Image (cartoon, rainbow, N blue to C red):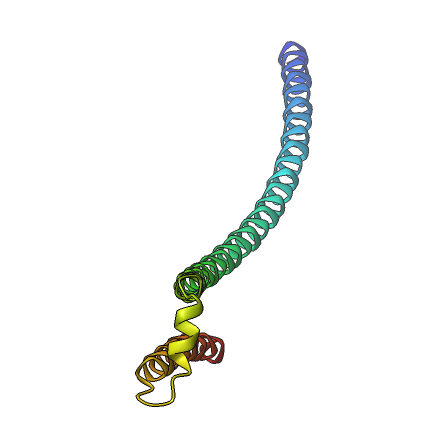
Length: 151
């Protein structure tokens, strides 16, 4: 019996050591599990922050693209208006040159025929030219003021 008692006490001590080792392993696993859970929670929080920042960035990008499209539209409009102004200025330039060319070709005899009292043909022709030039200039100005009003 003593031998069996000794043997059982040895087995009991071995089992106690195994139980202690298992308890320590369980405690270590529990601490590791808690650490892993904590790290997982931290990672989830960081991921949520990252997703929030990504959404903010995406919204900012959409806003910037919308503003950019608006600016491009405004630029195209201004460019068209500028081209219209350039064309009208060129027309005014050519009209002015045509007027100056007509005046440069006039001589002393032209002034005499303008003031001849009987038929006034030359004077009528000159009045018609003046009216034509006024009409063309007014047309250019009217178009210009219409473009300003359209803005």
